[in-house]
Length: 377
Ligand SMILES: Cc1ncc(COP(=O)(O)O)c(C=O)c1O
Image 1: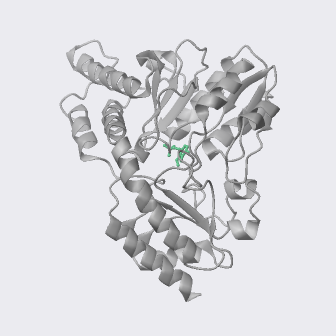
Image 2: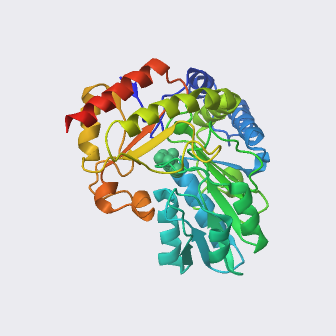
């Protein structure tokens, strides 16, 4: 099997699992307990927090462990928006992950926030001008992903953060897909969210890195863990696994990017040439920093994306139609339709996302399978 659906999830790295194991067995204490067993677990948790903070260039007190990227985005958005003394205006893009869009929708429906969507370029880019055009004096919070999960387009968050800050707004960036591929420091965001299972940690652990001095309304109330920002006994083992996986992902990032980007380019070239009319979605891979290095997404007008995926799977190639959350639904992707791609074309989407360990021969075999499948019809 050739797994080209890394954006959906990744296997757990051995180092992450080995680091987690003691906290599931011998050092099993509750980190809030005031005895030796609890204190040993608390030390592991705090070490994990310090390691995550170091990778992100943040303070330890900024780091909140959550049950995944979705919860982290919910906490950043609702937590910051509800605690902010500023107005009730939110800005995001129509290309965001459901975790962001649904949180914004909740703030609008239940808490009376107004929402503006920034205009996006046909390749999914958000320009500083487009952001400036929707910001207001009372804008509370901006949320723009560092990299898009469906089309791989990368945002210049550092510049967008400056634009948001110029009117006094806070900015959150969903960095779930960027981790391990793009630098996560120096972005200037007030909140950044991550998910463990995209970088070799288990599913069900995530991080919200939220500047510690900002007021934050918690979503989960209880015993006041995580500095009162997220109650509930912490998942120490998975927090440790996430810290190790994130450190490894960051340490390998430059070499991974340098190795995978040219492999992806060669693969994508064959996919685009496999049939008349195959359309690249998202940014061109040739502009540096504009597209995730392991990401190739296309539409194949005239074919059904789902049947292409089935034919590829029969040949041992695993890809997806876009977001795993939307897989199996007949609705075209909200990302592609927001880019102005007609619904019937958006329904033909196929996304290939490469892992850091992908081999050239695997991509050659996958490209040959794509050529066969696209020639079938
Ligand atoms: C960009 C983005 N944000 C958030 C999430 C949600 O993360 P999790 O699966 O950990 O809830 C995902 C996962 O697909 C994602 O791709």
